Image (cartoon, rainbow, N blue to C red):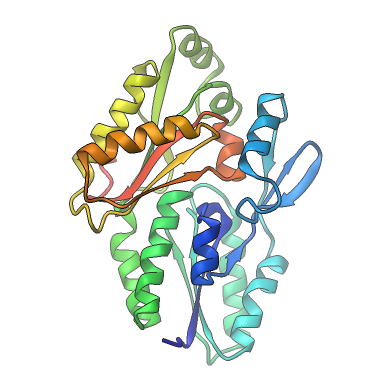
Length: 292
């Protein structure tokens, strides 16, 4: 059904490229740099995840940055100028200041195109939880739901998008300030694996600490069982930082416990990957309201 608005998101959603293409979802490409060269994340089409994580293993230190209003305008204005409205599904305002540029661009364009609607939804998520919200919203979009109906669903359900993840090496979280140098050193020594989650405020925060990778994975599975309500509704995505075998093993465990749930496996993109590092393993899904 032809809609009078466009549903758009950004690449920090880690939206699987094949689904972006299948549903023709416009995506704002977010910037990152590695080995002194800047890239715009095109969902793995320029730099594949394995190459990215191999560079990190070899010592490269990637960085991320925010977009400015000029670049956002290049994405947004053609849609409004064509006579269509715009629903932009953004990654969490609590993880970057870039949404301020989105809001500034929104305000400017609405003054220039007063007959148009331009709605921004702050998902309070990043990566796969954001992608799940985008995909659920786009399902409604394809069904012909209005921009207001889709927006309301997103606002009502965005805090049901959960992420539970663990990392292989604490040095990447230390570099990003998520753990202190002392905690990283002790944790590495005793094989301590932090479990992190997305909070009600839209931030990333530690949820638990366990000894060893096996217990970390078991903790993630337990949280999924505890928080998934409707398996057929609760689409899940397993994210991995170039550890596909572990991702597949996690999927097997989850499918045993949640046999009616649709679970995809997808590689982590460069923005999250830059901060979490190779070996990161996560399960993201739509379930109960976030517990913290």
